Length: 131
Image (cartoon, rainbow, N blue to C red; front, side, top):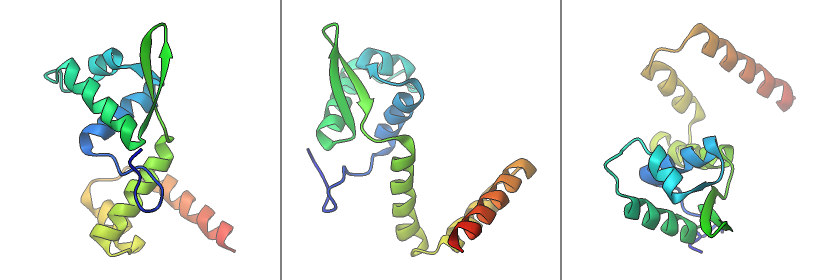
């Protein structure tokens, strides 16, 4: 397994993240099922197969056998990977400033009233938990 210095699998690439999104939303899948679900229908089956084999070696996927077919699943839950990606982005692009990240996000695109209400509620919960 290819782990980083913290004993974790490396962060997924954009293409790997697309495969992980499919596995998180649909559950364990064969390569053929993932290939059929990919947005880029131009990607050939053997490319998806190789990519998923590499992802297994990197520790991003786990593989089991079902009726003589290999079935792949994400090794970590979506939330875990999102947290790692966010932490990496926070450090690399925002010098560790959560304030800059949140303000940059809120000003980068329109946010619905419902979404803003949920964000405010989450902030209140974080404040209560910090007491």
